Image (cartoon, rainbow, N blue to C red; front, side):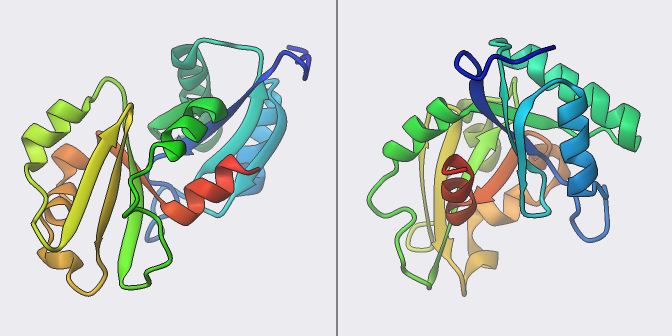
Length: 186
């Protein structure tokens, strides 16, 4: 596949659960090579947590996701869920961030939660429930939830406690505000 850069769309692939506590080890240099072998252009990785920025003329996100997941399984022997989003859509999500999300308050931890298709906000809300007042805030927009919580009281929050359960964590991938902003700027 040859990519015409003028027509190619910029995408971000977020791999769920890689390189956490020594599990699902995926070297970023190898991951970059996988994306290049798939024919994607201008491939970059960020951090060691499975963030890949790339260009493709493929418009079907489901097809991109399937290609990436299949190739990761082939190369690394891991079933890694992948969330793919266009840079344009991610920029739109960030432009709709609530005022309380992602500011410089070091007492607050700001994250962006993405739903792994076919999961929806309503489904996640039904499983997690209300955020704990005074300790955490959430607001959804498109395929994401802005989530902020008190650093010192994170274990008391409802969303933190429930998201740690395996039955819900498989439906989500989470990145910090700083990570998302850096990725979208790459």
